[in-house]
Amino acid sequence: QHDYKLASGIFAAGATLAVMYTAPPLRLKYRGLGDVCVFLCFGPLLMQFCAVIFTGEIQPSVYIYTVPIGIMTDMILHANNTRDIEADEKAG
Image (cartoon, rainbow, N blue to C red; front, side, top):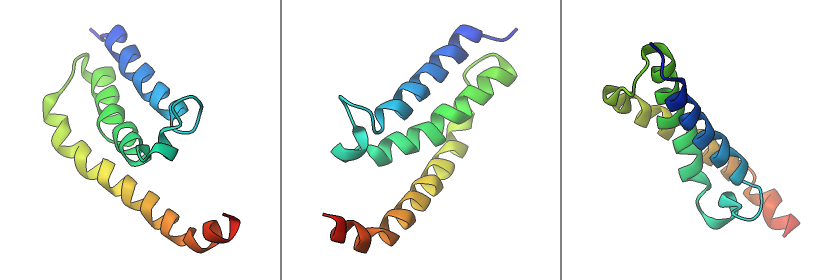
């Protein structure tokens, strides 16, 4: 039996973080919390959402796999941001 309330809660948390990444009033990206937001959305939240959909419950063992995925996603973000440093400095 699938726990759709739990899955909906995880989905809502991820969707809220995704919106608040750039949307006012929080604008997490501009407060130094963008990396944390990306890590959570593309790591633990996404993987636990899938685990709940497939198994019907939170799977604590999944966290060991979500950390590298979240970190790798953040590394891609950092690579992209590093590439844009010069252009961002010129733009102000």
